[in-house]
Length: 260
Length: 153
Image (cartoon, rainbow over all chains, first blue to last red; front, side, top):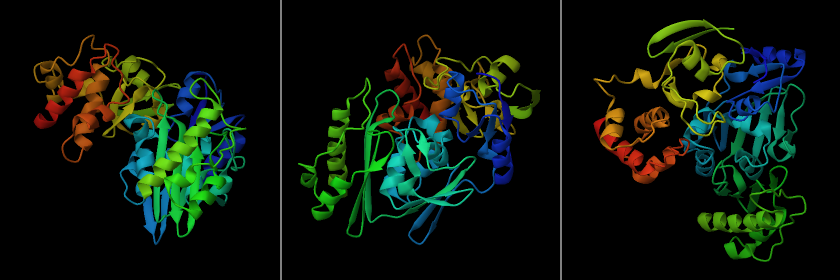
């Protein structure tokens, strides 16, 4: 690792000030992505600003049909919660036990890794990302490869999820890393069907053609014949863009079948 | 940077560089070399210790993040003449060959058994050890040992 200055601020104001003052700052949440990145010298921030000392950033609360999860809440805690079973299942499939003991919801979504699991839920469920500046609709949060709608210094503080009538997450994991080659969350809210896809494109997105087909006929067979546009999909040694497009259909079918 | 960390019941006040990892505090500053560094890329789990009662990869925790925490390492769970039940189960079941992954395996397994609600089965143990790699590939006996230890812990 290169040298850096480590800070553990105790207020949001202090944290954002540190970031603004830093030559090149990096927020540290659980560290499950940032620390390996630092160790491989793929990043060289002048200042690492640890958010774990901020009060009120962790925990799960339910108010009516809204589940609010603090940004510093560890994956293991979400996995153990029965607030939204599909979200718990998603969290329980991230990385390994030790990653889940440290990694956080806020850190995951702020990183916008194209193969991360949580982004599928952010776009598939009716969600609102709350930050140090204000709310951002979940559907507007991811803007590109490792890019989000967060502005300079802005910190995710919590995420609100509206409890769906039913939802399921299906993922095809990379066998070594457990990142999603493709992951699909299907959620039903009244007559609406939402299909959130991660792993396939540069960032998580909703597959609107699949949503329309499933809104008309909520059955695995409805997915047949719906073309998944793979023109901007990821292609690497693990899977071609065409294969990822195929997986989107297969995983959507599996999720629909589980919801029934 | 000054940190305070309580390791195996003893509190240490240390001055460390800001970019120090917890595993380096344990091995280099405190001489607790039972915690191993295998891959150094957060995958193999040889460095697993308990931080405030939870299994973590100490190669992927900064010393600053461990400031104020209680840490338990493989040296803190048993003695040669009084093995922890998980250590005894590993010995009984021949659950180690070269032994390099063993400290991490044992620390992960103890956390898994302590957190499991009800009885672990083979599938749950294998899933729980997803983040611990044994390059001797001796998983079969490791799983047997964990299943055996949950009865004696």
